[in-house]
Length: 224
Image (cartoon, rainbow, N blue to C red; front, side, top):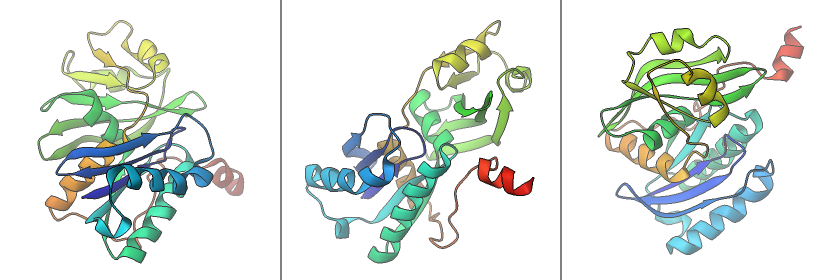
């Protein structure tokens, strides 16, 4: 049984999963108050699921890419829980969560997350029974230069998922299909974490870090 969180985008989500099924899930409306809301969301999901923190076999948490502050909130809280409860923890990419939501087993997807500044986070992934296979590593691309992403996967074999605005830009003039998945599911984060634990692949709680892909504004300013 897994307690999972997704805080990497504007929506905060908490879920309980068991045997790869979502037992309870709460997704708050888009906002930026993840730090203020995460403990209450955990309490409500635990209450609805009928479980307490000591019942869980492991934890799953989204590591990004996405909001820099949002990722830090989820990781900080769940790494603290992992150490306090002495349970295993798995970090799951938001891109892999979107892929699992968007396509069927055996299909390939290129999930899209708006990164601001005219950029987006993406990658190419294949959904398998055992989890997500990375075909092309997570990366940062400019939405005006998408021909490379499209050309790397044969037409008709890839589904793009993400915000509708990006889909409209990228799919224009191609034979690719698109699926709008705007809210990453914390329940799917828990399912993918459970699959990783089944294969003996938890993360070390001390070395688990965010998947940022690019530097934050603060890091850019410091570099300059």
